[in-house]
Image (cartoon, rainbow, N blue to C red):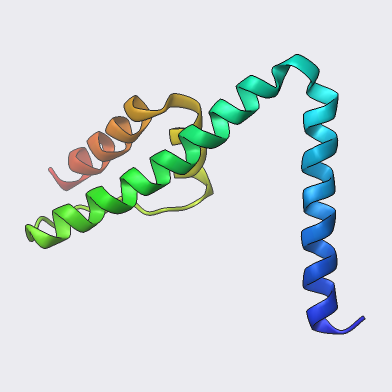
Length: 92
């Protein structure tokens, strides 16, 4: 396989796996959709807070990585507050 085709095949495989998981979950689809929305909105919130704090020259920035996305997806806004609280605590 060429490198371009491998990426496309992996994307199709990933989408198929997501569809299979949603189908297997049945009525738990609502929970999965809520988790995904919280994770996406949490990631956007972390990005915006990092940008806002950087513009005010406050040297606090929570990284965007799988762990922070998982935290914001599970806990929502309180998870973001905990991430920033931990980071502020490390500065002290």
